[in-house]
Image 1 (tube, one colour):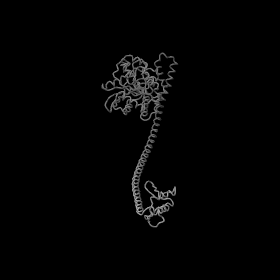
Image 2: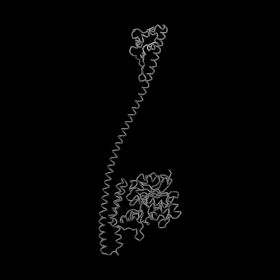
Image 3: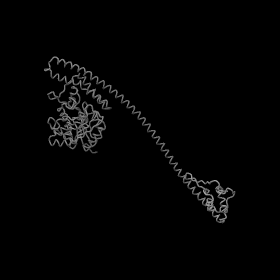
Length: 499
């Protein structure tokens, strides 16, 4: 007997005939009426959407057979035969549908499996690539760690050399101070003051060196810098030490206030950075005290300003009163870093005239500007006031037409007399339209932050309406990339640079 029919006729060893199938359609409903809550017999369960399974509750087959026997008299032989054919047909249709569904599920599962295999392979490749990247990064970190250790060792060596040079400078100066003190005491004791006033003044100026820790302050500031800046300062100190030893501690006294006209100083080498693009502007950039034009030309060449020609002159080497007459590259003489210190107008005029001459040879269609750092910034701002006034402090006419002025970590010389220079209508017009950018670090211990702040206030209160002041928390007497980015953006905007 067919296994399918055996589910419903377990008591028969032969396939069911038409009589036994009579009333099959009515059997479930009749059985359910006589047995409330009982199962109709066959339940189709679908597992995972692909497998159809026939099951029946206990005694379902025998109960259905009894019902069919009871109701077989109600169907004729043709009806039973037709019923059997219909059941067989329905069964085959269900089997066909289930087979198609299983085939479709098999295809879908095969595709899903292939997709998972591809995804798994991709994840393996990504994992391998990530492992390679992590390995490379670990190698780079080890290399950087080695570089940092080497830089630290180099920095420690530089500090040792700087301290040694400082000691070489300090010891002879200390000995000379003691000698000068003894000579001064001897002169005072002899009572011959009237005849030795000039000599006493000169020696008193030299004795000021004892109370000027600027040299040690510069060394202290150098420890905050790394790379080329510290090497540059190291070279400068070596040069100063050599000059000091060669001169055998014998310096020219300060020239400010001497009563006579000072000797003309020769300016150093001028370094030029050509524009990489179309020439649209020329800016003269001035270095700080003890520096030179070469160091700033190397920095300016790296800025993203391809349309600017940079001219970086070097200041003359002159005795500096602040250093007790010690020679250094400087645009003008400095007696003291205080608000009440006298301005070296003669030196400022000479520096501003040198800058004006450099700019006067540029083409007429090129926009002109001046910028600088520290003492170079002070010279730039003084040049700006000369441009507005139309002449230098000595009365000679100013030759250039400025379009922008930049001052980093500097101050405004002759600020007390600025108001008198803006009295004329033309001067006031030039002051109102001249763009000026001042930047200063709040941690500056060489040129205090308040100097830059008061310089900005002096400019704005005297008609310089287009001046801008930028401050930087924690920044000392040096520049940082953030500050230079500010300068680049400001110059591009104010000079209208294109391309």
